[in-house]
Length: 279
Image (cartoon, rainbow, N blue to C red; front, side, top):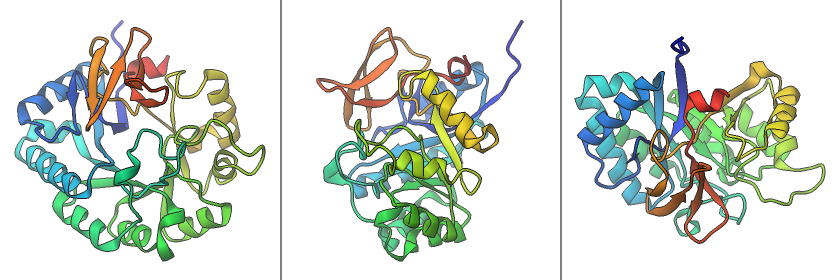
């Protein structure tokens, strides 16, 4: 029996061999990705652009915006853009695979430039609220109908609560974008779980980013009604194992679907589809 479930994925860095973060992304490539997404029962995504040199990010936003706005079929699948970076926590562990040299403090003028370049297509923006002075970027984005999500962050409980008061609505892939070793009690995972209901929480359910038994604990603690499953997938999703890129980061994907920077142990996205995630 054909699977009739339709999926929405808020975090897609690439698909079917296509890297959405490529500087030379073309309309024909996005068509390939969108057709494969539709075949895989995904009816809508947010194309996710990750940390890079700020001006290169502007070029990428301009390019993908132009492609989306110029093709009605692509626009029917790609509902908008998710910006993940460059305003993240630059410390090792918290930054994940995001390159430290391009991580910068939140800047209202830079955010306005991103916002204007996307012509209303930025729907979700991930940042580290502890670095957002007076939460001015959070307030600006929220006031302009962009969902603001904390992520790659080590914000204190008070900072998270202040960010919520300023418009924060979401947390990006909790359980990832944090160091392997954390304080026993007062850590970013427990802080965010304690705020479930005030914000929604995203998780990657590939069994790799978070072991399945741990994810069950997180879902029980947060309440399923406060949780969103994303893939955080890159070009290897719905594509064979091999060497791929996520922006300028070269990654290797094996038969086990684990995505790692070449020569490193840290994860750099997933290769899972939403159908596989459901399992």
